[in-house]
Structure formats: structure tokens, C-alpha cells
Length: 80
Image (cartoon, rainbow, N blue to C red):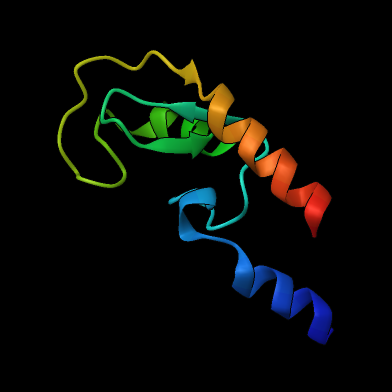
């Protein structure tokens, strides 16, 4: 559908999970400073101890909700 393609093209890459390449709905910040979709990074961390973006070892695997990013995504979704 052309309209859906236009909407996807308008979405900033910053709103996409670098693992799933989908717009995040539950973004979390990892020790590497990058944001990921919670489910995608949890699956990654079950098999890896490195950053999916940098490949470097992670200092810790605590996930912090990225509330500001979630609100920005929700706001943009309402506008589209």
C-alpha cells in the first residue's frame, strides 16, 4: 500500500530498533547508550554479552526505559 510506504519512509531511523528495524513501542537504553525495542534486546542478550551496534562487550545488561523516546514515538504515531 502506497500510503503505508510513505509513512514508513517518513519515520526517522532513530525511531527504529537497530535489531528488528521496526518502530519501537517499548524502547530501552542499554549500557552502550543505544536504544532498542525491549523484546529484541532481551532476545539478543540471552545469547550475547556484546552490543549489537558496536560489537563491544557490555559493562552491564541493565535495561533502562527510554521514556522520552517512547513519548516521541507515540506522538508521531498519532500524527500519522
